[in-house]
Length: 268
Image (cartoon, rainbow, N blue to C red; front, side, top):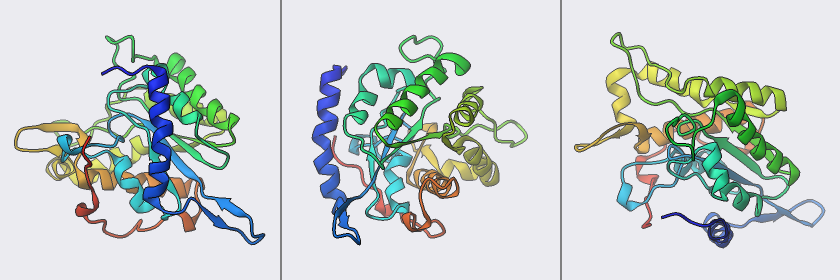
């Protein structure tokens, strides 16, 4: 179903009180006695990060597991949606919806690339060194204009190996284009593409099947099951700390086991 820009914005605004209620108090008293607002981490991305629902179980977006690695006061507002590119996300009004609610001190983590490479689909396709970077700048500029901090994240890698068991990159020049843009714009970069590729290499051909959405009826080498989502969310949280986007007090469980049972899939 295609939503109008007004519908997308209205839906995003309506969801904000529910997100606050689900994650506890949104503010705390500072030393001056003033109420201090807790920041929110907004996610803009595609199906690899998106919230999944009961009809998609066990498919799991890494954004669903990210709260397990952040302190309880640091909320995650997951706006990632299946099938979107940096272009289509904007064209559908989804960035506008985020910018309508994001506030000073918040974070906007942006992961696109999987669908930007769809050459045959003009609604999604972007060229790495021109239109892809141009669209990413809109996320950067929009966040900064509202006092929020933009963060770029290269696309998590698919599960693909050559005949010799070497994990293969699948995103062409998009990660390099994002890295270059991050350096040019002075934006923190989470290089999830490089980190996930190294992780899949360490795990190997057979073990990685336990991290992707492999079921009796499907062999999905792009999307994750709960262990895969947890593993990628751990990479994201670790990079947020390493890149000094968040402080050590803002993360938790980076070296602890996160039970698969913590993942839940609500009804759509």
